[in-house]
Image (tube, rainbow, N blue to C red; front, top):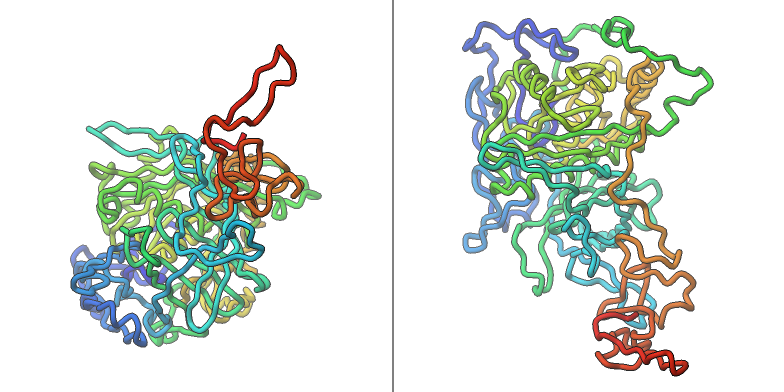
Length: 579
């Protein structure tokens, strides 16, 4: 079913034969209205002051068939300071009231001022600092800023203090990663891209997980053993000299399911086609060594994301912001897949339709998937799967559609997905990619058999009203294993090179994402360098032109080395380097 942040779904079109598309009641003739067609009211204006109060109950009135859907909320909308309005009717953080999840009953919200934990010169412990920027000083790659290899943030919310320890997700972007947009009808290519996407954990919390981006404030999620927390800034534009940047943080409440979903009767039969029935898969079946741990071996799904024109317009007609949104979504998906399926999701390209849509955008997902499949065959970039994110509301009961078992195929390795909040799109993309990987939807009748232990959030492929699922059930994992053993996913075993190789803090070499690296601690002066980042206020950590007490550069002309003989010359500092 559609997750929070996605629009309500209508029954699938008649005649759809794709896996997942043939389930549910058949739609009548074009333009016909089912007797039970729901109606949806637009979301109301949400005042900033209301964020400090308990969340209001969302309207449960569904949307009428064919009625225009409210626009999906933007993940970094600017607050209207003068009016105190967080968002208007089109850009509200309130989830679409058509969602099958009773969203506002399942979420709590607070305003928080996160801080980055840093070290000051000659200080042994971390201190909170209001500037959240993680850009490494004096480093660039492909004319893009390089972000710190590791960082820590402190967030106080819901009566608790969370310390998030993050490591740059070096596996997110391939070495051939490219960003594409259009000017005067022609594609423009930009190699590389800003990489501010982190994975990590909550300090002191076992089995916790974090997936955040730091390009512009903190965007993403973290989870402990009970709740999932989502965080994003209230404002897009921010003065770094101010004392802090307000963020909104949302927390799931345990065991929240909507009455609509509990009472939903699944009209789908137990139609579970075997992989062996996929004739196109038979033709490219490969031999598998039975002794090989094919599921346990790490796999790499090279993914390309395409953003339609309305998605681009939603992000203030900025292809950079649109690309960052796509990368943030895939960073969330990668955190799920590497943990659950031993599969890394690696971005090879992001294309944004900045001038116009390259295919017809329609509410019929079957038609759009077919058109996008034809468009995908014209794409030159190598990818195991190509997925479209579209700001459209499908007349379909789910927020995505993709070809079952289609990964590695130029014609079937595709999917179309509705736009929404990052966590909602990440869940939708996780589901549609899973279909490409031979993982089927699970009706509620299979839940006991599939042994989904995530009682508070459900499992990813369940056909029930779960929100922010991060687990695949036992059935899903077995289906993926079977898909691989039958020869599917042959393209997943080639390991792509990374745009950023992992760093090793403490090896004495200053690598990408490091501002300093002391190696053995005796090589650094005082506490100028901690965790391969310069202490706050420090300009250098070692070298003959680095002042060992102030951690500042020696002035220009300072004699750093005497001549050793008459054939040698005295050397002087430049004033802008410690070496």
